[in-house]
Image (cartoon, rainbow, N blue to C red; front, side, top):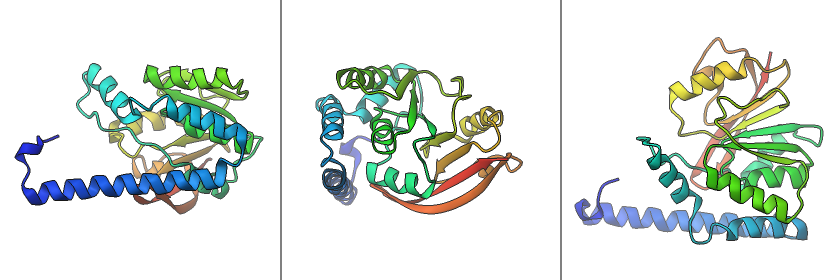
Length: 233
């Protein structure tokens, strides 16, 4: 990122405006979370405890520092699915208690706890940033959460055989990475659901054996994106 000293006043004002807009949209999202989900005392305790564990070191910084330590060139890839957006996705894709959802790139695991608590899904969150998995497992143990498993793994290598649903919010992953993942997903059983945001798998590999069953708009804190429900043929 460029040094602020190299920015013009106009660019600096735009940057400040973008920062304020981001803070406002995040505040609105959190207000919605409080209104819709914090009336459930058990979830309130889980979510609040998880958020407090990042009070002095936010997940974006943790992800950036980890990627820098690995020598990665692109270190600004972290993103999260807002819980209100996840609610829309879950309804549109008809996720239920009978599903085992694998979230590839689960980050701090907030969405995993939500899926498990409100839908009763079995959930497996996979990420390769150690701090995310450590903190999520600490919250899981503290509140004796059942039905959620966190794995410190590269999700190009993790065992996906138990999944009925794969969720990938990977808007910043390079095309080469997505193509590698598609090869892994090709081995999934017929009928497995794969949910992606901003692109369909066929955008990267036209001959992919997944059929787009539904495309729908979802509001994120940064704007509106299309989500794709794809079914393994």
